[in-house]
Amino acid sequence: MTNRAALSRLSLNQRTTASWSLPEAVQGCVDAGLGAIGIWREQLAEVGLDEACRLVAESGLRVSSLCRGGFFTTADPAEAATAESRNREAIEEAAALKAATLVLVAGGLPPDDRDLEAARDRAARAIERLVPYAHELGVNLGIEPMNPIYAADRGVISTLAQALDIAERFDAADVGVVVDTFHLWWEPGVSEQLLRAEERIVSYQICDWITPLPADTLLARGMMGDGHVDFTAFTRSVAVAGYRGDVEVEIFNAELWAAPPAEVVDTMVERYLRLVQPYLAEWQMTQSRKQ
Amino acid sequence: MTNRAALSRLSLNQRTTASWSLPEAVQGCVDAGLGAIGIWREQLAEVGLDEACRLVAESGLRVSSLCRGGFFTTADPAEAATAESRNREAIEEAAALKAATLVLVAGGLPPDDRDLEAARDRAARAIERLVPYAHELGVNLGIEPMNPIYAADRGVISTLAQALDIAERFDAADVGVVVDTFHLWWEPGVSEQLLRAEERIVSYQICDWITPLPADTLLARGMMGDGHVDFTAFTRSVAVAGYRGDVEVEIFNAELWAAPPAEVVDTMVERYLRLVQPYLAEWQMTQSRKQ
Image (cartoon, rainbow over the protein chains, first blue to last red):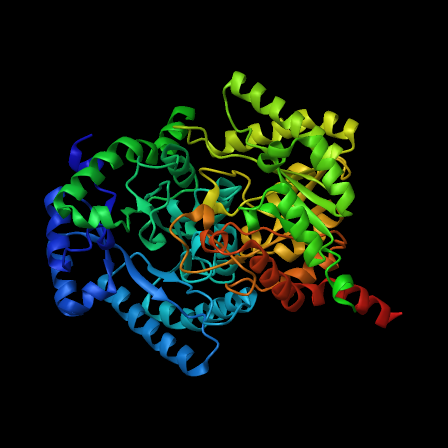
């Protein structure tokens, strides 16, 4: 397999190279021979949607995800309306960019609110309200379950099983799940949940769980191979579940952010080729051997 | 209700007042009017088992738990034999102290080992090997599921559902589960799992999940009321499940450890009486109203 073919499903999520603007990140992906990019709304806003669409089209890259919508756990009606309007904008951007999914992060507990179940329920109902508009614009809403380390302050949806319980209330074309190794590597029975998810897996994001956990838990993610995640087993499960989309590297890490972005991309390519890519097609090989 | 009656089920886990020796902690519990103490093996070793038993008997305190056994995820046969022998000693100590349970923490992934499923399986088989001896000595083995934040380096058993899957292979008198709010507050469907657990709940440990998470995640626990845990709802679920045992305050926190231990106990008593104790008997009141 040529290097370019081997990298055809690799995607750079912009947060991995946080110092790059969108034009720089697009160029970085092209230079490295990647197939796709995961775009963040903050950096999209800097260049504007039209220019972003032009850049992406010219580059030939797929947009593996738009990050991110969600943050709709508030119990305040005015705040909920604001959140809904922001999410409708995000849906419009995802449609224009032809993103494989709009990543939805539920949001944490509102201030001084300890009713986790109610917050989870509000998140599910907020998704429900967005589905018709997403359907109209042909955008898939990808629910991202987050590691319980973030249950209080970032994402109240904590497991793939729980994300699927919500997603399955809707058509698979409208609502899927985002599978991130950092968030899900520990989940008991996760391979069964991946099988259950099937075509609802709309994004496969990878990074490692490292110990000791860095002091700022929001920046606690590591480069694949630096931590405890079994990328072979996890990737096989994702492949067996039928996922054929892009593999997005999303790493929030202060040390990586301090390094030259192109070097980070080089490392990420090397790790991907060694730890992830060989197992993406294993299922197909197993199948063809059987035939 | 008198203060003493209200505190009859409150237990001080020694790690909350880490600077106190066992004699000091016993005296601290007596002075505060608590009903029980949770003892750590490290501080037990300083005075010896006989002296510890004498101290405890004289104090009139119950031993709500002995902390802790476990740490048996190793794949190395010699290390596994050492771990088993340490755990047999811990069973003997728990028997002598008449502890309500010996808390078992599974242990993390062995160095350079990423096979989480195999580590979990080894933990379950290590428990299985201990059951006959625990049964013989009348000791209950309490499996403690740990927050996924510790899945890599401390405890590979991550949810109450998973702990129960293991515990239910044995008699409830031999193997139970330790329910700790810090570890389980986020678990989807935890109230159903508590109902499922019923008489297998052999310890109810409380402390809060605080944000931002302190830099050392091992010391990330907060005093009840300082964080995001809904102690009313959680305690009600534990009571409805039928738990009638002690409520142990176990807080690993550098700031608390720097404070005078007796003041920490005062704060813990105040928070317990306000946030936890009123909901322990709610189920009984509901029942008696029905009759």
